[in-house]
Length: 196
Image (cartoon, rainbow, N blue to C red; front, side, top):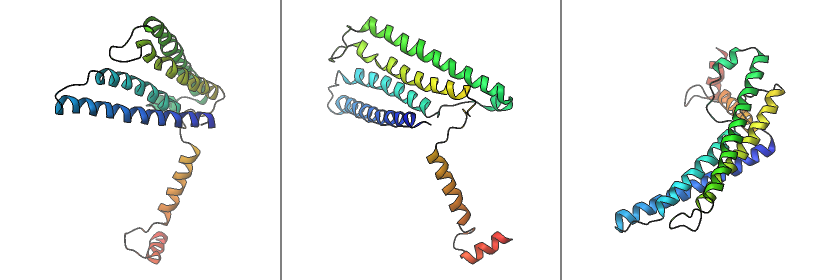
């Protein structure tokens, strides 16, 4: 991943964590006021719904940015390299089109329609809450555009490991090679077992 993409993904992870913690706190408050105080709070349901929307959209952008989404690559790997490249470009262009048309354009239209519609009990409008759609759309579109460029250059789109993950894997393999074969065995016994 590029440095900018990695930093953006890390920021999105932080935002998603904060949104999740706030969502859990709001839902816990809702349960407490309803079950313990017997006086349900009126704003918690609405806030939790919109927090969930923002959490999902930012998490989707984060997962797409780190290429952690589910991908069925069985058939793509069976294709020759030029066909794999064409498939990767097509998939990335499809994601880009969805991000631009569905999330950005559709989100802006939804915001425009509901910008002045107040949410009962909250000091914000529905349109302001819909801002998550175009923001997530822009992030996904930028990631998809980078993927289109990578795919067009023939870079491996299926390789999702970062340099840190590669280093961690190499370190784990090194530690495993030095580990005793049986718990409690001495280094000499391990060396003899490896020679056999």
